[in-house]
View (cartoon, rainbow over the protein chains, first blue to last red):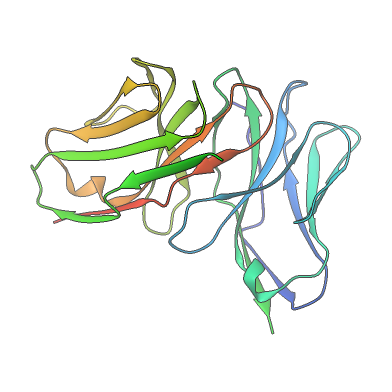
Amino acid sequence: DAKTTQPNSMESNEEEPVHLPCNHSTISGTDYIHWYRQLPSQGPEYVIHGLTSNVNNRMASLAIAEDRKSSTLILHRATLRDAAVYYCILVAGSARQLTFGSGTQLTVLP
Amino acid sequence: SQTIHQWPATLVQPVGSPLSLECTVEGTSNPNLYWYRQAAGRGLQLLFYSIGIDQISSEVPQNLSASRPQDRQFILSSKKLLLSDSGFYLCAWGGRANTGELFFGEGSRLTVL
């Protein structure tokens, strides 16, 4: 299974942009890149996903490298509510098994 | 709209006792269903997934089992709990396509004493 590598933790100041990196050098051509986040004592929440092109939605933007071996989740203005563990996940197969890594713990400082 | 519910939300069980966690999905048909476990301070571990009634795939050998008696019902069971079974159990559903998101339930926190 293709794996992802993320920093264990990152800090950001409130109302500043945050760039969360993810490396996936063994990604296959049919793997989608998904991002989820998890607040304490809650289930993960979908954030965004993409295949090759950059994607934007109301929560975040996803920038995918041209060779698809890395991607970056961009929160344009971090708020205290954005403090969570962010998971970068590769999704493949008809059953869409999602394999979660350890994620990045984002701390937002007021 | 689609909803997912799992219960109970919390439970404390003695070692060796049985376990049954239930998950139901409403508002969709023929979903993929998943059971994940998260140990304290750890990431999510996929335990089981199902693409249809009575079609269960196990990702990790353990003393847990899963069943899908109905299209939108997914049950996680154990005949005898171990201390290592403690954790936060999450049910999730997703559509068939290789895109789109998984929707997670509220989670069930199990403490085995």
